[in-house]
Image (cartoon, rainbow, N blue to C red; front, side):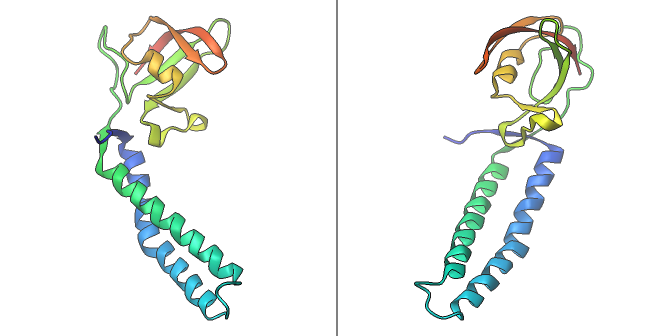
Length: 157
């Protein structure tokens, strides 16, 4: 069973660039480090060799992860100005308000691209799950690790 990974065009491009960098530049850098370490004598006691082998494992694992992620990616686009009664979905930009706190604006993205500092929350996060499928003006219950609270969707684009 393959999972669909939602990515924006920007997120897809960023991950594709990372994959290209790993396959070309990073692989060659690690290979050079391994070669230098092997020339350094006893491999059993060579810390540099061990570090290079660990880095090689990480790079190859990340390449496999990105290959799968990009192969199963579904590109999403912002929904634009929602029509009346249009439901929030992956790609929607949403402003929510909880009680007397300041409103917060997020774009709903797939888990691989989530970055709350950049205002991108995952469709799998507690708030993302809570607001998907709801509409502008709805008050929804979000169950987070910090507790359960109600948020009102005050803007959607």
